[in-house]
Length: 548
Image (cartoon, rainbow, N blue to C red; front, side, top):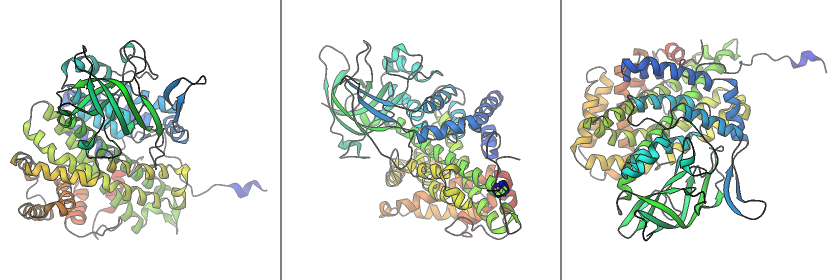
């Protein structure tokens, strides 16, 4: 066959060798906005280095290999000894090591620590999302461990370490450790009070228990320890289960099977049996839910961060493709209808990024003692988790469509993003759980609502459509009869007005105006690509372009 028949034309170059951080203007501006100037230069240097790594061909290849070679369960060795190990692709360990080294398990007590980590999470998730699960759980476990100061003193330095060591050994023998979680059971799911795992005290060992039960979801089962809920004499209680005991023996931790999941293929999710498994109590008996509450809030924020990262990567791929792909005599990105689609996608992505960075900054301030910011988080975190994660799947699907048939092919990377996109809406409580938690925050006192309204008040008068949307929300909040059945609508409006308020204050005029018109003013459709006439589509797309 003649070589000329293989000439490749009208195909975009790979989106590689670019700075995932520096080319995301919404992210860069958010870091500058929320981080103290004395820490900003160092943070930008770190994030730029991480962004260049995430955008490199090598790391993109690691992400591909980690998903194409999913984890394998090894219950026994060749001689029949029970080992209960999960074998991961080498690429998984490389990604995980880079994430630990970038500080993705450490933030608590550091100046601007949550904001800096959130930005790094947004960047590194775009390389590969599955391995962020153990990083997220390790970071989020710290507040729970602090309910047992002696345990926290031992484990916090391990979790904050910038060194990743794979393999099952006593955590004290390793330079760094990871923590997983095993909370839910088959009969309960999100209803943690339905946990039936039994916890019986060990005589002569203060705070030690033996656990017996079955956990339906145990993520990252090769972690060094796990937060586990079990029923003690005085009720539901939190425990720390080390994978390997200090003397080198393996704690009873029988892995029954790995879940065959829609996406998140690089990460192992297991079912595990406890049979006399040794554990240390974290907090008081009967205070299990209270002990893990801040941990759950932190992982929920990570769910929103992870979805924002998936959205940004999908938008970057779509705009990049349409910049180089031509049809009907012009680049796709310059054709009016496609430009409307790309601008609408970019708008959604920027709104998500702006919101999650604001919440990470609020977490920093709350940890420093700002009670108003802590109160704001009680409403804003579940609302953001609800809305941002819900918007992820339709956005990724639309971005895939921008690539046409090329986007439906595995090599484009978009199918992997699409399979990943529903996960964050399910993990740590699905949509209904988040909506009900917002209602709970509204009902438990005026503090959370007051903090939320003060936040909205900072943009009062800046846009008439936003002001009208806030008035409509206040009217709905004034009538809470039968609110549970319509709580999804209420939480959606809470998230949208909060996003609109932040964009009006901080985003360029073309972004804020288009958002308020389409999302708050009713001048937009249910599908992407329906921004109103007069919106600065070219400006919005150019702002979101991943490379110059």
